[in-house]
Length: 236
Image (cartoon, rainbow, N blue to C red; front, top):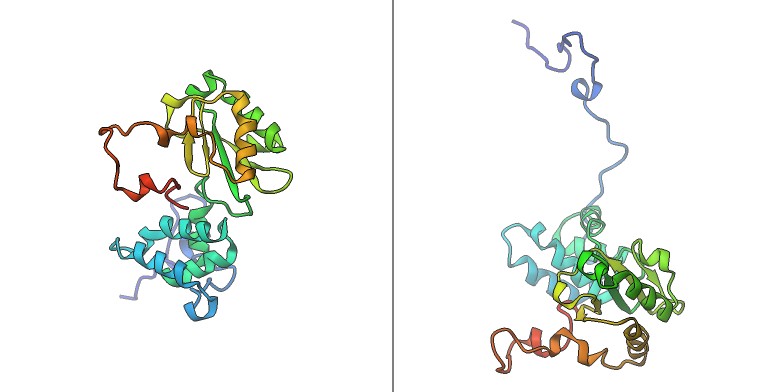
C-alpha cells in the first residue's frame, strides 16, 4: 500500500480548504535570533540581578517579569537595548521579552520621566473624587489630561509622568495615588500641587499622608525588613 500523506491526500468533506491545514504556513522572514551576551554589553549589575531571579525558578522564562523590572530600574524604561541585554542573559529572544513588557501597564516601552504619579480612578477612588484628583495632578505637573487618562502623559519638562490607573488596591486610602511606587492617601486636590513641588525639589512627598507612616498591622515594634525601612519602592 502506498504511503498516505496527510497533506497531499487530504480530502475535504465538502468544506472550504484551509491551505494552512494542508500546506503549512510560510514564515515571512528569518526567525529572530537570541543575542549573544558578549555582543550586547550588559552591565554587571543588570546581569547579576537577572541571574539571581532566574535561580529562583525551574523555568528561566518565569524570571521575565523581574528581569524587565531590573531593566526598567536601571534605564528608567524598558529600552530596546536593555531588553536585548536581558534577553541575552536569559537566552530568549528580545521579541519574547517585549511581548511580555507590552502586556503590563507598569512596564514602559518609551521614556516615561524620572518620576511616576499613578492616580487611582477605580470605583472607590472615583466616588471620592479620583477624577478630580487626576485633574489636579495634571494641572500641577503641566501634563495633558486626556493623555493621562489613556496610558499616561509627561509633564512639560519631561520629568514627571502622570497617569490614571484602573486600581491600585488601596481602597481604604481613597482617593489615593502612587508616587514613585509609594502609596499616599486619602488625598485632597490641593495635595497634588504640593506633591509635584516636593517631587521636583527632591523632598519627601506628603509625609503625613504616606502609607508607610501608618503603624504596621503586626504591632508598633520597629521592622527589620529593608523593604519597610528603606523608604523606597521595591523596584527602586
